[in-house]
Length: 265
Length: 323
Ligand code: SF4
Image (cartoon, rainbow over all chains, first blue to last red; front, side, top):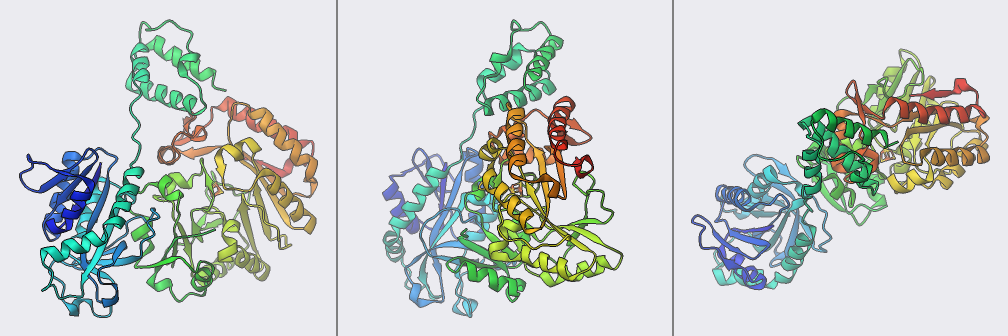
């Protein structure tokens, strides 16, 4: 599953439309929109609600092979980059002083910047002497998502909306900023959808074989180990079994496993 | 070689080695960091994903820089044998590499405070000669083109009496410093093993050419048939390797040869299997001997004896070390 998190609805609206996401009505706390393999959540502003929503959504909908994208607007003291989108390569939490690093494994072609997360609206003086991005959720999203997944699965895209003065930031302005950068956002969405980890399904036949050999837990581990090795060599474990199955008892099962082992080298 | 990102500790910024490395990767994105562990030691890292796009981390090592070599590592009967952590991780990608079982991620750390290492060497030398393995947790020669660290250790060995350095590699260097105190240790594997498991390393052909050039130049050469990896046709594979080795290299000129089958601590193997999914080199059903996963005794014996006996036709048995 790909989880997209935005703080406000105007940040989400263009993404929802472009990706054809539908509202999920049985969610009481957060506004959620989804398709078969994407869930977008509007978290609300600030670290606490961002952390709560990430935790809730991954716990409820996570598949173990999830990717996480946080997209939204931010401030930057550099006026020349206004309305541009950036891939974040470093996150700093202003309150705790802790730094976090998402893995930069995707070739997005987007410019990169560091990002600082504040617990309140950022003022111009907070940004003095810095050329980073400033916003209110990212570090909490990373820290919470990291409980569930690795740094290669978490990506941050930030669009510069202002240099510390939010007075003109109406919903239509925010929405149009996201619309202007929607192609880049969707390119990253595609990359993330491609990159979802393959989860190996437990091998049904192997489980059946373990039953047929009356395996104890220890025997089962050894059997799976041998089968894994043979598979990596392009061989099928059943080709090494001459004994009639199922065996009578654990002892006989063990003999079969030892026989397979004796043919390995 | 290319790195898309270079993470640099703030305190590492002004070291000469940092400048040298940065000049080799001008287009790289630079990210300033407080401490290398903030990125290197993150939880839940995906080693195999990172291997596809390794990042470079430049840091200052203010912790312990030299470690006494454990018996399970190779100390070649040397009383004062140490290994040093000059760099962590490797540009190559061997499926069975213990670093994949030991480190939390695949990014490469280079410690740039070389003068602190030099100072430690002076301290160690005060109590007598020392042998230092510089490539235990990396392949320093493979990193040399942009770090110059192998060159640095060679210069140090020439300058400091009593210091012997060992540079172990799966690359094929073409330039050698001739000294009894600088040991070029070439890891050799059959072509089949290199092709299947030792990705991005030099081919056997190139490694053997490099061994020959080193010996012709008069450099000190150690050969390492270690770790030997079991493959179904192992006798033929190692037999072919020995044929090619003895055909092309005058083994009497080699300082010594080490032989050993693959072995790894139980804890590292668990992580290694996760990080080398589907690799038969690490999925073999090993036996656990005192916390180390090893091939069954009979197979171990068969693999090492075969190689040892073949080598003894060409080199004095006293120069062969079995681990
Ligand atoms: S060359 Fe050595 S250090 Fe590098 S990956 Fe291979 S085994 Fe590991």
